[in-house]
Image (cartoon, rainbow over all chains, first blue to last red; front, side, top):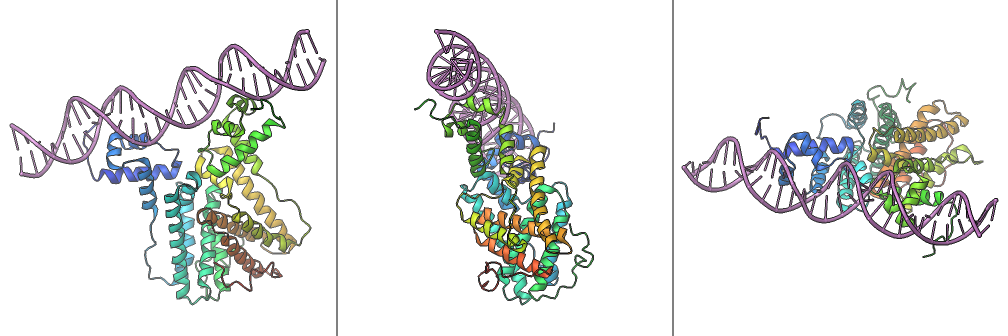
Length: 200
Length: 200
DNA sequence: GCCTTGTTACACAGGTCTGTGTACCTAAAT
DNA sequence: ATTTAGGTACACAGACCTGTGTAACAAGGC
């Protein structure tokens, strides 16, 4: 009812809402009318802030591209902690897989800009792993980083269809083995190894 | 031009075409008109064989649900051979990820029937791994099977965005380590270990 | 007081999509 | 020769989608 209740960055509000709906329901499944209606603004206002739906999609993916902030914790804890964080996100009921993989899956491979940002995101995470592995003195840091990235994406894909946070624990257990095999001293990072009776 | 050139199972032709287009371009991106036009039949004929697009989608996914046929080869070769087969499929330019994961990603989690078949497929592959691991006498066959499944889906997701068949080799290398760690005698199954200089 | 900026309400063009209705046509079976 | 099964051509309803055009309105800065 209030005509202009508050205008704290309308653009941010639009983007935040588009993000939520795109992620939860899919990009093609959500129309601009739906987004505008959800915020309670007119479609015209939305188009005054974003020239097209494609621009909104790009902004959505750019917004999802968050770099992990540097941490003081030991590298091995950071690596294994990734899977704990993953498990927490899986447990949240609004988790719906990797937004970049989903976007590529539903928008097709022809959409160059979407693929480009998806590749950049995957690579940035791989490099984050690699740098930590280099700090640990792992010989083949490149290869092992790729393998850890596979475990991350594998658990995300599995959780997307199964809705089972245990996938993150399985990935952590596998990562622990791979790290130990590379000569890294794994300090039983959070009890994922000994009591592994029920890994699945 | 030929009005009835050949009617070798029209239903199969429709399904085969729908499969190809759905998989390559996405389910929502392909309309029934497009499918009919691709075959050169009228839309009416399509709807005479499938009551709705949803039925066509279900048939498409059911068709993609293929069980790996039993093999005489040693279990460890079958397991590692999975990743070789994966690499071959990645190299094909018409590979576009896992149809089940893609379907769940673009159709959303509300679509129960799609999720159901996706879960069944993932579980069937996990059980295939598990049975082979049991044959090998691996203690925690359940857990290791889950981890191998993670590697499969992880490499598929990574290849979907990166288009890099090397993801399959990285997964195979990781699988080899996990198997060895579980006490399985890995007979250097296809040279994925020694010359691993460029795993990535 | 006035003007600029941002928003609203609403209609609409033009496209796509799923699904149906109808009349005709061809080939094979009876 | 006639029936019948399956296919064709084509229009169309009804929904939804992206994007635009237009007139009015409300608030803050000058």
